[in-house]
Each structure stands twice: as structure tokens, then as C-alpha cells.
Amino acid sequence: MNYSKKPLVGIIMGSSSDSKIMHSAAIILDEFGVKHEDQIVSAHRTPTRLEDYARHAEKQGFKVIIAGAGGSAHLPGMSASHTTIPVIGVPIMVYNDKGNSDKFKFSAFGGLDALLSISEMPTGSPVVTVGVNKAANAGLYTMKILANEYSELRSKLKKYKENQHKSVLKESDEMKKLGLARFTNKKFKK
Image 1 (cartoon, rainbow, N blue to C red):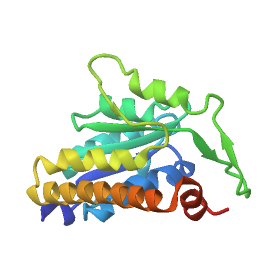
Image 2 (cartoon, rainbow, N blue to C red):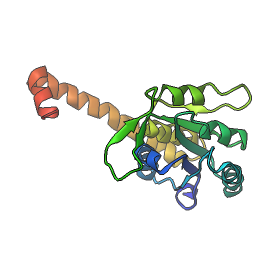
Image 3 (cartoon, rainbow, N blue to C red):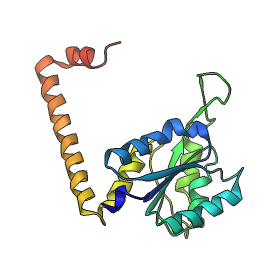
């Protein structure tokens, strides 16, 4: 189980406020037992660190980099430009106010700016892009990449998908039995 002994995945984000979104990727990788290394690397504030990180990722033998960024969202694309490792970009909409407030402030374009910045990379530096704030999907896509090399992960991924299927059938049966109004009241009590 080489994937659980040394990090095969790097999770990077441009700011500590992005961790509220990016932790979902870590949760998925942890669920599958895949070791990962997590860091803050800003494309704009620490550009030389970004280049160093890409070399580090290659030296460590990472198989995938998951990079989350909001706003102009250059981190995924710039990471891809410095390495041959596949990069999965997570566009981030929500920024946590860096002050002592628990309130969130939102990006001006609702994450569309980050989505377009990541998905519209020029030919030659492709980045796979998941939906806005969908770090869990980046984790699952990483599992699909790794499952090509590790048969045990392929089995775990199949089991994960089977459990999703069973969960939907179970909820459907419960809704059918209770009726839509009672099911919704039970499921989403306020």
C-alpha cells in the first residue's frame, strides 16, 4: 500500500481562508487512506515558492496536485505550467474575512471569475477544473487517477460508488413511504 506510506497528492491553496473549502478534498483522500501533503502557496504573493513547490512535488513523486484558488485564481494554472504532474483546479467562491469575524465575504462574481480563470487555460497548460467550491469532487477525481495504478483503490472506489447507489435507493424508498412533505420535514427540519 504505497499510497498510504508517503504523500502521493499535494493539496495547495492560495490562502488560509481557502482551507474551509479545500478540507473537503483532504476528507476524501483520508477516507480512502491516501496520504497527502497540504500547503499554502500563493501564486501572487509567493511566486518563487510556487516554482519551488512544483519541483518539490516532482521530487517527492506526487501523482496529482489539487490546487484551490479564488478571484483571479492563478494558482492551478501556474502550478500546471511548472510541472508535468496533473493539476486539478478548485475554483473558490467564498473567502473568509481575515479579521476576527466569523462572517463570510463573497467574491464579486460569485466564483465565476475563478471558474473561468482555471478552466480557460491556454493550450499547452491544461488544468482539470471541478465546480465552484467542489473540492470533494477534486478528491474523488484524484482517486480515479490513482485507481489506475493501485488496484486496491480501484476496489475501494467501486465500493464507494455502490454505497452512493444504495443510499439513493434507500432515500427514495423512505420518500415513497412517507410522502414528499413528511420526508422533507423529517430530513430537513429547521
